[in-house]
Image (cartoon, rainbow, N blue to C red; front, side, top):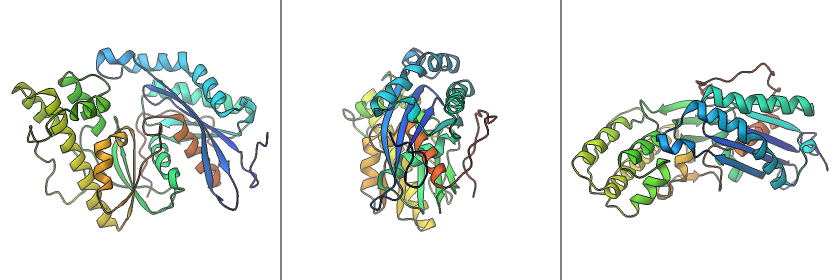
Length: 343
């Protein structure tokens, strides 16, 4: 099988993400042709979602690390089988180095380094948030400039991307990430874990006007987010007897409103017509519908690329190869806190 493109780049890039509670291995193919000179295609995207944390209502770091160790070989085998490839076909390896849970990150990072060494191929330490951005940007072979909203269980960040590889932080949450607030309110209302899907399902049955949430940071000139106030208001409404479905619908409406409103203001301020929206919360139907009602061109990740996954890390690795970036040193370590902004 041809292991290189006509540009001399590795044809197949494997990506690994073990930043939190999903063991993800993905494989992408670089395509060089007159029709798609910078094309890339996802060949495999296999994820093992850990269920052990449901009983705790949140991720237990030590348990997450153990699950990654136990599952990564199987997920790797599944990804190769889905892509119809042998491990010897892999021409480059990328793995998330941060941000995330350090113990969990180390599992995938060390696995990726070992694989790259064994195959004698380039290794790239990838940034988790950049992976999320590429998960959406790859959908339309999107070209900068654009805004990127990464909204997940651990992150709510808004970046301006004037060119590929340059990220200027426009705004971020002051407290809870949006997905974290979804989880906490779902647990409060007894709707289950993870909170995103649970809230979305309950909201379909609820009255979105039943609980009058106050808009966070109303009137701000910056582009920041805050969800702690919504969480407190939800607690008070729950104690006052609000129905779980109504609480879910009302919270979802308020969270979606502030995410869309703040992003629209930033787009106007920075003169951007295109917005990439990625991360686990980007799978929320209400959020997608609200963004699609704006006058912006909004790009979401494809199926299976919203939550943490290996394919998005493979996409980040492919972008590094295209840009001619040097491979990462094998001494590169895992880090819990890794700002993406570099502009």
